[in-house]
Image (cartoon, rainbow, N blue to C red):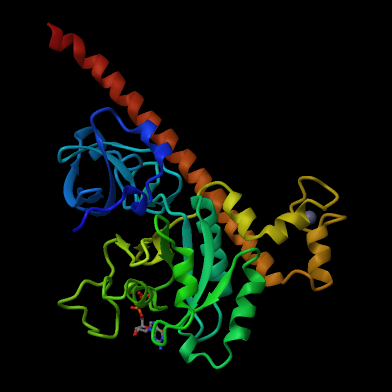
Length: 344
Ligand SMILES: Nc1nc2c(ncn2[C@@H]2O[C@H](COP(=O)(O)OP(=O)(O)O)[C@@H](O)[C@H]2O)c(=O)[nH]1
Ligand SMILES: [Mg+2]
Ligand SMILES: [Zn+2]
């Protein structure tokens, strides 16, 4: 690979301060059973995390991370600007990072079939809580008889978020997506399987970077999207194709939800009681908006479900943190009990 400018990989000079002396900056494009593929100014290289980083699920290198390299060793992960985390699985209270330093999240859905508004809302909340700015990209425009209507329907729910229509077959709308991922910017695609994420990645890249369904249904002989990878686009932007977002959890804070449901959050500030639960309290502005048709009750239900999920997540994180603390204390006590014998 020819030499590249670090800025084309998303490097900003303010990150340099976090780089340990004698190390070189590199961006993680792929993580394979703990082994890293990284991009440096000199091109693509293999590397591996230093032992201290290896077992750290939160702090360990993830796709999109900037790491400090000493030879083949990644000795540090530089502070993240944003992070997608996996919270559902895992043995510790800590969420696992699946993609880091993402500027823009392309929330992908198809214009075919009924609009999956509830799903888009959820993705938007996850995107906002990751620290990146979302955009909705509606694919398969070539198959949709009324694209403006399809866009308008989603736009109504995607408050304050651009909604674009594209076709990976005809190329319609691709330039608008490219404009969202200029040189040095990093975008990640999220969305259900089958909506055309990999096709979009390939169309943007101008050649096949991601395996799609439909070419070979059995998936043999080609890489289906099971591993996350950072792809370089011709315009200099970077794109992460994430497999199914089901695994991506809401963060345990409600901030992402508040942004995705800015309309509901705004109504909530007008309720008579500051701690109004919008469950029939007098003077509830949310109930009033539902009554006179300004707020879709299905959207309100969706908001409530996500709120409950974030709350459960918070409780889970707290419970796991307590369990970990208990286990740590038990280990300390055990060590103390056995120590005198060993000393003697
Ligand atoms: N007509 C049409 N089909 C598309 C488009 N994008 C994807 N597809 C088809 O939709 C199916 C799923 O696409 P794929 O990219 O694998 O979806 P992914 O699971 O989200 O990565 C494949 O059969 C694609 O050929 C599009 O813009 N137009
Ligand atoms: Mg795919
Ligand atoms: Zn209320």
